Length: 180
Image (tube, rainbow, N blue to C red; front, side):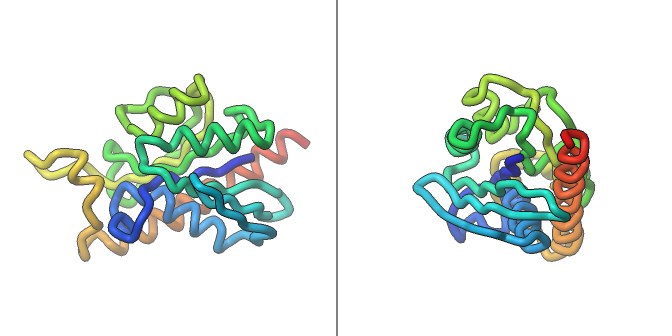
């Protein structure tokens, strides 16, 4: 299995709504045993273990709209099919703090998901969707997701990141158990 946490590179984007997926993947690494970690031009890849299940955690170093490049490269290099992929990402169609799991389906215009679907040619992969809420009336959604969580939103965002990491971990153990 591969777990990919979507976000944007650089400290400028570190605490933005669009980086919720990357934050959750980092949290997943914290609650797992990281066996090995390596970086390359387009991402950081860790071999990890959680409750006896071994998997890869990918944090792309590309911008969100190019996430498909590193995700498809890892799937190809390690011989995984899309069914063995869990993508953790932000979602403006879900209220702040809520976390939902989904298998397959559309991308709802999320450019990171669009890039992955374009590169792997399929939509049938698992997703952990982190609610970041809708932008205020009149605010461009692109500007909204690239802004930091407000102080009033920070606690709900932290809790959602933890819930998303736990959801991904649960999906790993459920899926691995089904394959045994």
